[in-house]
Image (cartoon, rainbow, N blue to C red; front, side):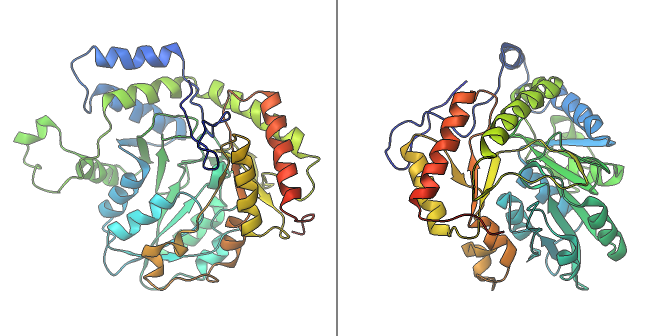
Length: 392
């Protein structure tokens, strides 16, 4: 099912969109059943989704929310993290999660990433720990699991709240376990272009029943709460997941293995065509990682490419009606964080990777001819940019 995406360069509809949701008649039937029913707000389907998703991750509790960013804000608030506290996180990846740290009143402290995986580096995070540090947020960047054993050891050594951002990594697996099983809480998101693609929505999972109850109270109120003695305990965010989104997410979760396998086939096509591309680092998989399901197909240009040559390549791709994008705009260089003293040069690896990371269309509807066309166009564009071969 395709939507129209317009080229920045030409203003014409792009022929190869970044994401094309992999929906079926069963998904449409699930939505229609809700629309024909008597409940559109939070209800029994959202509760079924919570239980099923928690079970998928091997966790005890699931809390369905309107999106991952509000989910993180709810988790931090439920944990009592706020003004005077510091939270260590990466500036590379899903930027909305960093904004949640600001919104709860805490101070974001950025640490650098591992060059190859793009994930928060445990040793660099360790160097940022102070007596004000209360939490660490680490992401499974673009689908690649972080070094969770090392991050868990760091968090336990300092008594820190460990948040796992799995908004881009549904189904991926570290040798130590599936993503979503490592943090004190783990956050998932169902917006485009993820494999479970609902336009919005997300789930928080945890094994802490007390924390789960607090997050549920902060998430929203139900009609039944109007007469409850707990009605005035917390001021909720009004961030429940409606039944339409829950039905779509539950339908897709039921066939998650099929969705992941279809995307794995597209990944194999990309990998094959990328092998002959000198000057490009295709997506990396660390030896301690068992399985990666990519959020997007992100390639890294060699160090002889500059940010401006990366942008020129993207412009050429858009001219060819291909919706490619820069993968990351480092969070610490955005205005809200510059105003708090962060500047270019503070995170060398993050900035180096972000300047050269290109996200290519990645969805189950891509054909071998389209993938070959995109890789060929990227090769031509890289030659046009005047850059040479990679030096990593």
